[in-house]
Image 1 (cartoon, helix red, strand yellow):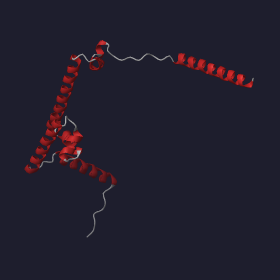
Image 2 (image 1 turned 180 degrees about the horizontal axis):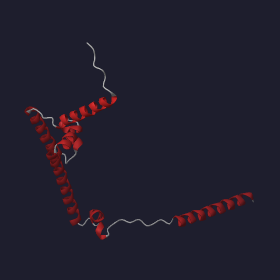
Image 3 (image 1 turned 180 degrees about the vertical axis):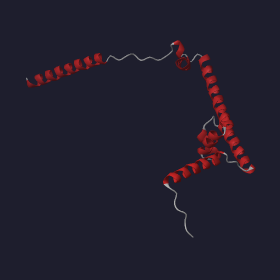
Length: 162
């Protein structure tokens, strides 16, 4: 049996590109069997429950379920509903933290109050500003200090010689 002649490099490249596009389309449109789909949905539900229990910590949740984090990231990348549910859990955690922050502010604690003003009150001027550094003034101070050190060293040397 004889082999067909090899494709020219140009045709070969076109064929590979077309084949790669077809394979990519197959992956995107890949459908699972009903049993597999049920397993995937159950896994997603378990991930969401673990995220709620672990305050949105992905690594801890996945470790608790005995799965790799890549499973979580795979499903968040491909399922917009799952991604939205994960974001909702994170938003709930942020709301809880804000409530605790307000409890501390209302209790009269200064540090949470300053934190809130620095992060949320920027429009009203509550921004930490650093004083501008005058490099020339520092350079002059260093030169003066060097002169004093030299004078002190010379006086010590002069006293030792006498």
